[in-house]
Length: 253
Image (cartoon, rainbow, N blue to C red; front, top):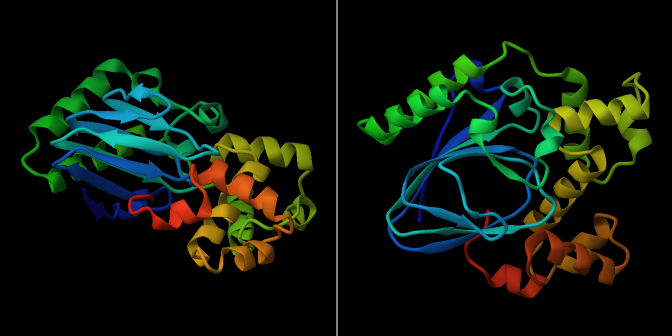
């Protein structure tokens, strides 16, 4: 499997983290961990099956999720992924992002069929991968609703990330001048998850990044997991594997 990353143009950078071209010459399984970014995917050739959704549509928008899932790439497969920033997808789509939680939905539910057919045709006819990314950027600039990032939600995301997801709601709201109920509704509409769900993803990804099979217990304890059985349960739900099996596996992201 080959993964190439492309950086978005300046106008799109507040909303999009990167573009990825994922190509696989042979059949391969890739385990995808929960993350704080919604992802839009266009199939360029071949087929992709998901462990929880079956064969994926040619163009899909994937919401945040609380558990890992496996993607099975057929041989001679290529896909173009748009990886949004944590609050970025809301700048392009009108529906509340949390309605996509745990789901991958065909893009024809959100974008006019003709516009979708046009961009898919352009991608298929493009001379090379860089041109395909350029076409996707032009498509996104047309979709962009000219909205700017919600600074209150951005501040909350920065606080959650800075504390590796280990932050109480009262501490999170300090100085934001908004009620808890109003904040939670606004946060999940834009990010695709409740503050609690979002923090849990950040927390577990932080533990996984900082630890290995020999230091996991200590890192988990420092992250606020004082009950080892509770942590292992959350770890298995998040990764689909025991800690030992996870750190011995090769393909996950």
